[in-house]
Each structure stands twice: as C-alpha cells, then as structure tokens.
Image (cartoon, rainbow over all chains, first blue to last red; front, top):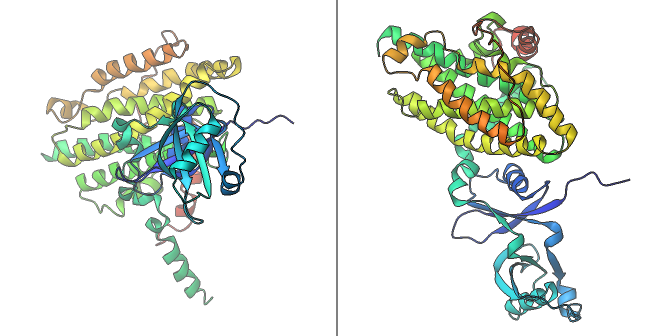
Length: 176
Length: 255
C-alpha cells in the first residue's frame, strides 16, 4: 500500500526571545510554509511563543549517546562543501531537544561529530543536526498574527462555558 | 452618538456578527472530517476564532441597544428565527467539498480584512478596538487560506477543476458581502461607517488579483442578486434548527 501521508516536518518552538528553540513535535505538511502554519495550530496553544522553526524530518541527522560513544560516527568517507548545521541536543534524560548552536561541516556525520565535541565532556542523550538551509523560520513581522497571546481568547477554554459547574449541579440535583 | 445613529450602528454590527456566527457553524462541521489531522485542528481553530468574533460584535450590539451583554447575545443566537438573521447567503451554503470550504473562507476573510482595516479607526472606540483585535487573527486566517487556495488551484487537474467550480458558485454570492447594509446610509453620512461600495471596489481588486495569480478564472458578468440580507436561501433554516435545538428544548434553561 502506498503511503498517502504528507511528509513529516519537525517543529521547534521558542517561547520567549531570550530562550533557545526547543523541539515541540512533528506535523505532516506538503511543504515548509504549511508545516509552519500547522506547527502553529498544533503546538502554539500556550500564550508564549515568539518564533517557530520547521525542518523536513528527512533532512535531520540524528545520533544517540550509544552511537556517539560507540564509535558509530567514525566512518565518514563523504566530503562536500562545508555548510552550516544547527545543533539540537537532549542533555538530560527528561529534557527536550534544545537548540545549542551551529557547527560548520562537510557532511552530516562530520556535523554530528562536531556537535558532539561542542557539547563538551557531557555526552548528549540525543543529538540532532539540521542543515541551516533546510530550516524555515517564522518571520518576526508575522509574530503577532501567528502567536498573539491566547490569553485573550477565553472562549477557547472549556472553563469559559461553565459546563463542568453546570454538570456538577445537575448531578447533585439528580441525587447522583 | 445620537439614538438614531446608535440604533443603526447596532443594526450593521449585527449583520457582521451574524456572518461570523453562521460561517463559524459551517466551519465547525469539518471538525473530525478535515482532509488531514493537522488541518482539522487548524480549521477548528479558525471556526472558534469566527465564533469568538461573532461574540465580540454581539456584545457591542447589546451595549448599543442597552441590553445585558451576557444574556442578549444568547437570545440573538438561539432564539431568533431565520428571517431575523442578517448574514449573507454566502455563509449559510452547505459546506460542500474542501475546495468550496477553502475558497469561501478565503473570500470571506479577504473581504473581512478590508472592512476591518476601515473600521480600525472608527470614531467609536469600542468598535475600533474590536476591529483591531479581530484583524490580528484575520491576518493569520488569510495567510492560512491563501496558502491553501494557491496549492489547490495550482495543484492537480482535479483540485484545480474543483476550485474553479467552487469559484463559479461562490463569486456571485460573495458580492453580497459589500452590498450596502440596511441602516448604513446615515452612518456613512455621519462619518461613522465606511461606505460598502468603496470597500467593494477595494476588495474585488485585491481578491481578483490573487485568484487570477492562482490560475483561476473570475466568472463573467452575472447580474448580482440584489435581494438584501433579510432574504435567505433554504439552507439557513435547517442550520438554525440544529444550532438552536438544545436552547429550544429548554428556553428558560440556565447553565
């Protein structure tokens, strides 16, 4: 059976401008623009969001702590032009993949190696590198329509409709 | 603002509120049925936004008519017959296929954006404030809908054909959005409402440019249906009887 799903994109969310982007989850989308819009609708529920990034899942190279320490990254024969990669790492077991910075490398494997080295003595639980050119960012001038605080939309919250209070009262009246 | 102008302002805002409410209901019919999960969530968000916008305008109508801002909107929504609604026939049409839904939403949002921009510097602060607030969300709606219209219109032969069929059906209906509103004339004269005819020109130019860029053909000259907003198609009555069914069961019911 052929796969009728759209390609997957990974979504990275920044809550406030002074914080790093963190992995929020994935969405399906036919292209980056729709991925950005879907990311907004699926993940930006909380009032804080100042920026979203999306990248095609297929463009991301990943490594686990075992792969990094077990030498799985050593066999790198491909070399190409040096390009920038964004580095995301999960530094503790319960943490989220967080944007740490950028490395320049001639291949995905080299990018992972550079990224692992940049993490210092601490081996990350999970490491992702994304070619900078594959990343799509929300435009700062679109931040307001994209991320306007959800706080002034109380009608999106079930509490707005007093249904639970009403149901409780009805149950009490019914002697339940 | 004198009583005559207040009454007229309430009437025109009621028309805007009814447009939002009925469209929100049609949009909500996609919840659980949209083509893909992500779009289901997105479109449910849009439906909720439109419902929220209706609520904002209904509250202003209540204020202008000296009614209770909490209870009066419910009375308007749940206890008016079809003939008392002032929405355009565009928004009451059944949801159709996804192309129809997307194109209707685009036409509505692009028209709303033109109107809201004009209302954002309304002399009545509450109107200006509400328009500015809604406009922020509409900017997002329009971006979302433009993305969909472009992709469907220029996508596959079938999606393009469906979009053109939707446009042929929707274009004449959309023109009703900017037919002068009943009660508008004295407001325009008092500088308290943007003339619909001026907005119509502005909206048509922008919407047509975009649709033509998407490879769609604007339907040729069709005599516009001049009947006003008090006239509805056969589709509004069943929509309302569903939407109002619970409230009608227990008219004195309290939440």
